[in-house]
Length: 403
Image (cartoon, rainbow, N blue to C red; front, side):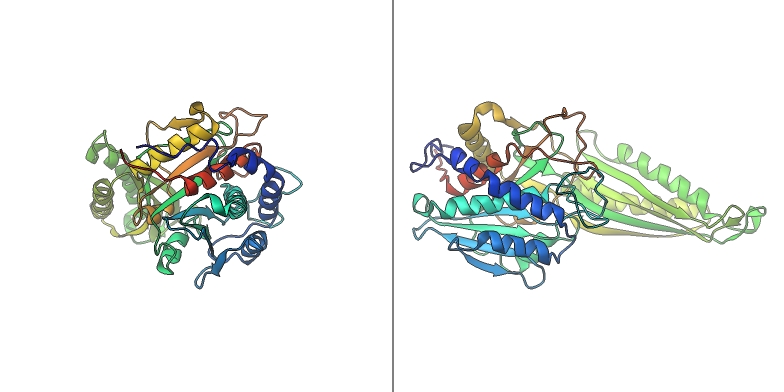
């Protein structure tokens, strides 16, 4: 694949232009961070985004089922439509690292960097709107709520966000990766994520007389052991699969055998065959282990996000673009996928595209020391947000050609 030289595309120094927007980028990021919102309804965040796009000459629509924002920037010249995404939502935990823009909402924190995604995408929209004559086609800016388990991308797809889109690109910051470095790979990038719930049904009674009960706790314990053993015995070691029991609940006090025990956890995989195998095996192990202990069992798998699969050509293009903008050493080809999940997977199931991770490790810490995403102490370096802005803009402007 060849691609346009982006060093001086149409007379624009994209990196310098993005750096000039640093004050706006950082201000918006901190405003969103200070007032985090969870789920599909994020009215304060939506308004901040709308305010940031005012006067940029874009066709803006807001969501019906969510507080999404879709902004189209038309160059007025024929060309592809490129979609760029920034997710908007926060997580349900308290922020324990103090700052001037620390979360003001109890139990809610931007612990996954979505505040920075919003800010970088808004600045990219401004950069491109000010240089509309320098690209062809259309850019669609997808500001998406509900990534953290609420399937926000799916709602936006149902409302037409992908209509007419030719390719798509997203950035995700990672707090414990080196600041300013991009990381990605073609093919599976992130795992599918499904949730399971198992209830083991027994018969309760006095803890001093277990022979008069059908104790669900030993059955639940054996089920947990069986589930964790199952993966290594049923999945080829060359394939990736994870099943983790993360929540167990049974009983009320020390001298009562409860009538039931509840087990909950997650299933992760990087291909649909492994995903299906794990679903079927989980139900078999849970049902038969409970039966061996004289208990009944209900087992439900709740489907979550599919595997996030980067288009090979699109991922290669993002690496070439990052290399030209910032230097070849700034893009690292990941040796393997990670087992986290993303609802960007819904987009990549429909149109060719990719996601790249942007490291944002704080300057006073090494990546090994930095609190990871989803931590109550997670924080980001703002030094290289301009790289995200320039990368978004460049991925909208570049026109790849097949050799």
